[in-house]
Image (cartoon, rainbow, N blue to C red; front, side, top):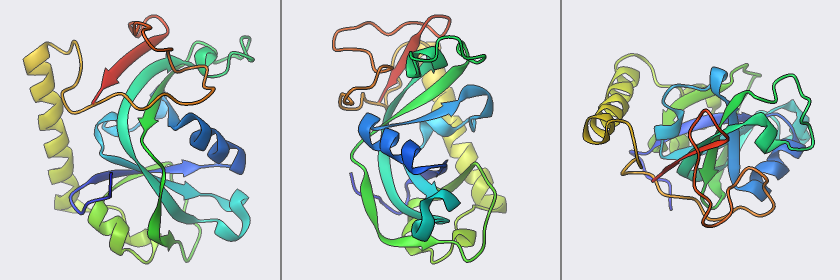
Length: 199
């Protein structure tokens, strides 16, 4: 799926090359629920911002992927080798991604920025020459949030908040990821291990 100008894009931080390998192998991005932007599961694409740990590629956005769906999972499902971790029961959004693609040109930052997530559009991501040009301001941000809220409220009105979101579909099976339910496995409610929403 190609990035289009009207797309809603979540720019997410990738803290280390190790995390980037995990994202590529799992075809997924994880966000602790308590830190997640409320609209994160309803965007069209996720773009990836590299931190200083990436050396010559630091402080830049070079890749993006379409959002295909998401699951609500516990940390122990993501990292079964760490069952005694203090946050083993913490809930995470697992954003399921389509093919990871390269931007036509990287969006670099002329100076270091501290952020965790920001919302932008496909048009801005494709045209920006600097990270500072991406964030939506004022009326643009209000309109974007309003459009997403309408989508969410329409879904709740139609389904009572149950079932599958009509604009989400399941991502292709990710290789060797413990948190992705095998084919045929029924998704579980948030009080259990998994809660899957499909596009």
